[in-house]
Amino acid sequence: MLAVKNTIGVRTIEIDEADILALWASHLRPLWGDGVLEELQLAEYRVGACLPESPIPIGFASITPYGDADGQDRGALWLEHLFIEPEHRGKGVQEPLYDLQIAYVREHPHRPVLRIPLHEKVVEFSTKRGWRKQRDLPGTPYRFGVYELPRERV
Image 1 (tube, rainbow, N blue to C red):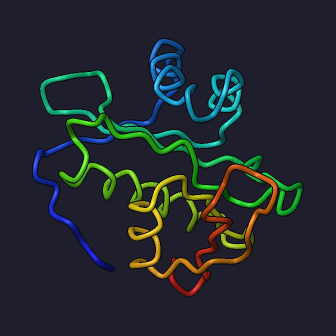
Image 2: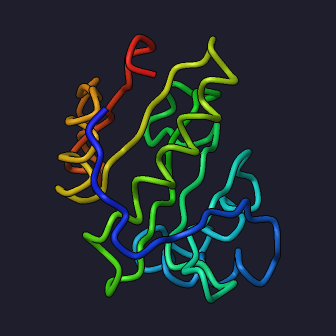
């Protein structure tokens, strides 16, 4: 697997605290809308990346069974809600979040693994790790479509 050096020494945490979920939702609300806090609460797995000296995450990611934008693939493992604080982007924060998501995916070997990238950098990150475009999502704001990670790449 392609690795980018974690240049700021983040540690990862699982997230269940309401105040951290609210902070995460505030970052995602402009892209995901007003229902994002509920989506985060319903996620089956949530992880954050923190600087060593701080309990407040600088990056977040989740896995949810409800990531479908077109009614297909409900119940799959959707890697979603990725957010990295702008000043920490490009410094290796996404990698430990992704690694923990993939560890969770390995625990559920019979479910498809999907994502809808919202940024070109996520498409690039994903395709370098074996993700393949599965389908387009015409009539939605998701211009990159749905990507699937083949099970042999997990």
